[in-house]
Image 1 (tube, rainbow, N blue to C red):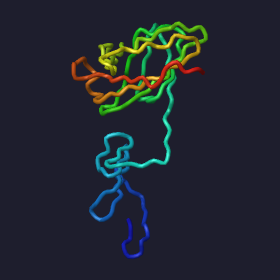
Image 2 (spheres, rainbow, N blue to C red):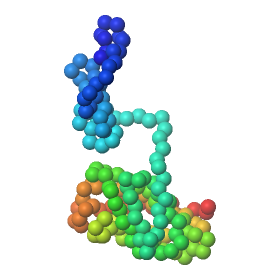
Image 3 (cartoon, rainbow, N blue to C red):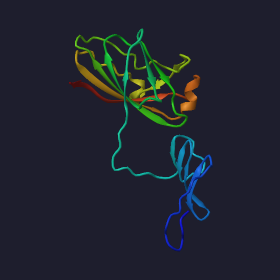
Image 4 (cartoon, one colour):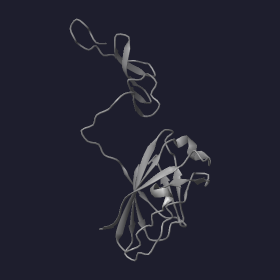
Length: 184
């Protein structure tokens, strides 16, 4: 409780499911299972209703592996991933997309032998249904650099994670080549 006359804060034990912090009748923050700033009903672990400013931030980097020529990208684990190609990748499976818009980035590096391919146009949902991948330039599909030890970086945008559960002409992933043929 913020004392208006002295400016002191009185704290105590609250046995409520959610803690609301505010001034007068205006709730500024809600703390419970989820934390909300500017909202009394946070929809995810940390939900800001309004603009945010960060001096800096970091992201977890997930490490992807190839299992029987497929790679699973779990978007609940990270949004930035590294993949070392030691075999061909026939398709990518996207799991746990957020319900709203999101991006994810793949850094794909050939092993010391090289020559491996990755099907950048074959993405699937958890049920293995095809997700269309759209590339700029009228659908010109980029090829993965096959030279040993070289790295390519691709970024992907999903505008509505809910639409990835089933195929529709309205859903899909938009791909962008960030850079190719980097020498490590």
